[in-house]
Length: 236
Ligand code: 13P
Image 1 (cartoon, rainbow, N blue to C red):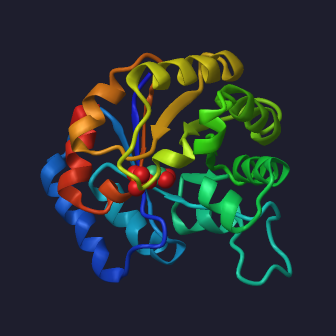
Image 2: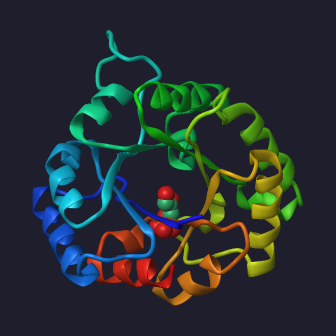
């Protein structure tokens, strides 16, 4: 299975940030053994898509609405992301589950909307620090998977992102990452790529990406700078 290295720019990036794509292209020099994806803010997708394609990378959205169109001020349909040049969309990121009260049922509807539009959903799951301390991580992630994964067959990526590891510099032990990815593999089946996310950086990427059933990374902060993102891509 080819690794997927995905950058989630979150709410960062202006038109000037497109220069990072060119810089990344210069570093990749037309070749990467991993599939490379950048999920910029929605405002940059249309402008970034041709630039990304030119360096052999893809672009994705960070969220979508379950419906294809309608009276939903401020929301963006999966069809619109596709039209702007996206091929993936992240759904159910813990920041959206927390900031916007997204339930697993909503996340599932978004994942199904992504497939309807011809996008591959990247469904995010992960436990909080308190849940891990209580030893409930598999129960929590199992419940999120049961509620959030789209029905039926189709393209799917799952990202395991422990909430306490996001933006903190903390990561689970290699054994804990391996155990959770094994658990997700049992639920998701053989063909699904399972990404690890949460404080992935150049210094820990090789070790994490070498773990069995880790099929790539979802990278936040370290994806904003071409040099760091390139180092992570190279580790894959
Ligand atoms: P960081 O890599 O900044 O910890 O963020 C991870 C993340 O949330 C990616 O979706």
